[in-house]
Figure: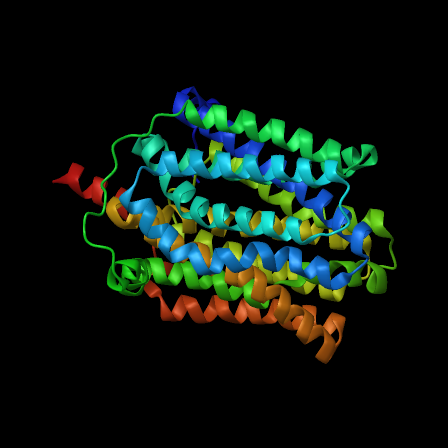
Length: 418
């Protein structure tokens, strides 16, 4: 890691664009996380159906899967800052619609699913635009610190949102939805205060070829393909966090309060690690740090499978989140630095598909494996598979595993020597 002074990690916040963007993203994520708790409880109280709880996730994921490649193309043809702003405004509309639904006292939940489809559509367009726009908001020398601060604020919101949502739900779902709407309205105002630099835009005609340009680019760049696919398979096989409810009950013999701490630990580890990366960004031995982060993820998963001690499991999950944050941080920088600005939205869309697939399929894989082999064996198998993938990818992508500096830093160093 680069030995910068701690003050330099926060100095980047003097950038007006970044400060407004991080505020908007934090408030928007906090609102969405609060609302996710309220929607689940609200739907289950109305219907008492576990199937309906599953439909909550499906209603959001289905439009995301259908629209994500098109959304990446839109992010390359139009102003990304405006896309993010419009998506936040759409999320605000969804919150207001939920306020109206709650006020109606209706016992029919299909309007909620319709609202979630709209929310999932906004999420599909927002993900590639928000990943790509950060590079247009800050100068190049501050980008790595901006990524770390963006990740830290996101994880803090993910940690705090469900807790605040659960506390506010004691006053009823209406309270949660109203507060969420106020936070999203503030997020819209903050995002409207940003001014993005001029971006290179795709000018070609819309076609299947142009829609798939991001996928073709990823396939043609071993560094990008290796970084994205490493994360995909590591999370796919190592998704033991999906089994935490059963793990807490059957292995640790703990209650829901302990489960809450276990769920919080990875996010807390990731948040603190990302803050550290803002102060001391990684600039050397990049490949070793990334593969090391994934290896730590696998090792901590193995520790979870081998222990029945709650403090040990809690510590393992905390370190697991920190290791995952290191690999995510480096992957994000590699993808953004290696991608030309005119196709950054489409490449970010491909990255979003990989992230979504690894999370969704990883939870499914963990559940199926646990049902087949048993809970502890499934966790151990997941950790071992993650380590195996790490070793295999180091051999398949030597340009990535042996990388010392980020490619753009190597080019800058070569230019200075010349």
